[in-house]
Length: 223
Image 1 (tube, rainbow, N blue to C red):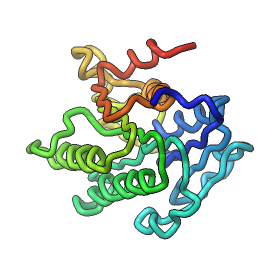
Image 2 (cartoon, helix red, strand yellow):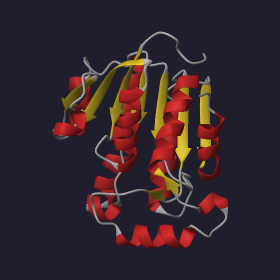
Image 3 (cartoon, helix red, strand yellow):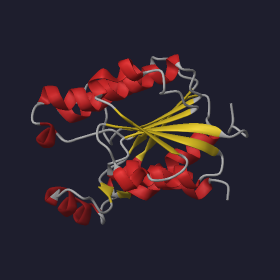
Image 4 (cartoon, rainbow, N blue to C red):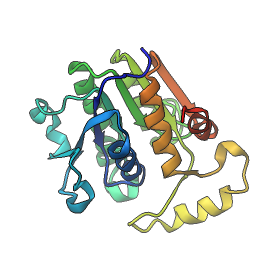
């Protein structure tokens, strides 16, 4: 299917993050979204003070128990952490695989027309890197759910102003700014804009966009 003309409902998980915050800003401004459901593990306060927004505070480990209100036409998943912040590989996999997968499964069961996922460059279930394997496992699992339209984005380093300190990421962003396009940082606002644009298009099947192609989606979108 192509973009939906009638007012639609968006659901966003990960609004407290860099890409999620940019997504939230765009979704509340987009006239074709009548309502924006924000699923979060803690109250976001003034960040969700908008007449379009309905905030649902949940423990993501118990997402299925809150399934009833999680109905939306377009679902945006920007959940993610780092192994250091998670504290263990097991906890990292829970946040970066189990939570997004359960969200995608609920989206399918509720008849969502589109599911959008932020993955990472190098995502591959056969990778020798644990982080990339988890991302690759998630991509395959989401594909196999049979959603009508799935958009997967694989950004390199995500640029933008974070509230948390990630000094190594900042240094990496400076170095990679001079690297080949595939490895250059992508701004969070650009990723969010590409996600919203792909949801508007809702191409059938699964579309995977590598880091160097994310900005092209925004530039190629309709005004």
